[in-house]
Image (cartoon, rainbow, N blue to C red):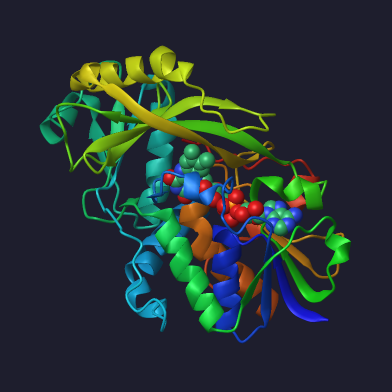
Length: 367
Ligand SMILES: Cc1cc2nc3c(=O)[nH]c(=O)nc-3n(C[C@H](O)[C@H](O)[C@H](O)COP(=O)(O)OP(=O)(O)OC[C@H]3O[C@@H](n4cnc5c(N)ncnc54)[C@H](O)[C@@H]3O)c2cc1C
């Protein structure tokens, strides 16, 4: 019998394998597509932030920075002596209209309690800090400018975690797990992302297709933060000499990952040009679509032991934030598995009790 089997070798599986291996557990990771063609993490925007409503999500965002900043030491291996996640710490800027302002003032209390370093600015003063912005229709905004939020290269980060886990003894194997009961192990971790329901049919997580567009613009702002325009739901950030922009539109029941090209002209371009007048001159240069592991109950993570099994743990439902939460979730699950309780960030609020009781704990900051 195996010691630990992790089903799914994506970013959550790799992070969990790393932390468990560090604690001396013998981990086997089973991944059905080692090229990760449809997995969520390589198709993500790579963003990490601490600007959330709930304290646990804020603290997971803080730990992401701490962990990623130190991977040149912690994830160094013989094969990968200089691990990097290519961090771009340009910060995040979140823009709120009157309809979201009150909630945002409440969120700021949590940011403060968690010492998140978030700054609040009224819309009337936005142009003093971000000269490119049209603040029309906005009420308030929050941002960080001390290199504590930004984005990374998801593939490089995954590679560094996987390499280190392997050096510590983990084995990554190709395989398609059809039923959780097919696995014989002391501990089983389901890290199957948006496909979790195929293994655990009582978990309310579904693949939700999101489209990202690549655009170029004669005017380039390399220092631009990852900006989320809450009134339109559009978000964007620089990518090399171009920009990436996410559509607010999402779709369930899409077996193929064809981008929703019409969203560009109908939704994304108008919203971008409204907020950054220079974006009127955008040219579409590409795009892709990927699945969010959407928790359809409350858009929040589902993490912990499955109460119906002796030995099954799971982590899924991150709804657009699994990459940034992977270090904190991998560490937290390892604490739970090896000591019976969380030792650092208390992740009990993401446990399965609320799921089966259908008690929503909605995180409003979904981009
Ligand atoms: C367009 C887009 C933008 C995003 N932007 C961000 C962002 O800026 N920041 C952020 O933090 N997050 C972002 N995300 C979300 C993030 O990518 C996901 O939350 C995260 O990747 C989830 O990690 P995971 O390991 O659970 O799932 P995945 O990365 O999907 O990995 C799951 C793996 O499990 C494997 N698997 C599934 N079932 C089985 C089985 N039965 N047997 C064997 N293997 C199996 C799959 O093949 C897959 O490789 C974004 C996602 C998308 C699509």
